[in-house]
Length: 293
Image (cartoon, rainbow, N blue to C red; front, side):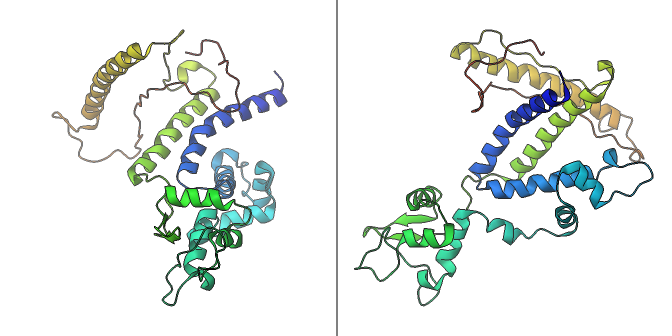
């Protein structure tokens, strides 16, 4: 397989990897524009690590531009400018509409409160329409789609007179606990880092342990439920055994308590995850075959 074919295969693999991650972003109101900015920053972050630095050479913006495909001007901005949370947040169309509803004089009352508005222009109501609000502050977004999203997320309600009222300014489509967000980043990073490390070593025995088992022909719903119970029991037993071993090595239990931490600390561990195969949108209905265990 040639280099170009490998690049295409790698991009396909990353497209599959990004599917669940993008799903989480969309669910929590992060837009494609925000994600593109984030990806650029990550490219620059990774390019500035020691792996890509030439021996005895300063890691210049030009070098990073070559590695990432970004312009030198863009690299300089991403390396030296501090991101503004307010500017990033305002890229969301929903948040722009909500901000306009609370800040645009045409859509606020005498005390600065957002006005109740009809969906379409109504001569009997002394206010501009919701459709005009969306047109003014969201560009080409369809007013009905915007209203559906605001109603779904609790940022708007429809009163008994058919007027739309704003009920909040914080757009969080699906509430996600901060601890869950941190765990998401850690787990995905650790899995990806292990796979990347194993792809770099010449001898598989030098790699980190990574194995999996899966069905060949599939389970019935009843068998799947039984597997779920059996999996939790056996994996919990294994994890507790490993944790006990680590605790003894670190002196957390037993007689050999460490007086001080080692100078070089290696944070290591094992993570076990249960997967249920999901077909991603760009693939056909026939899953790839082959034993990759």
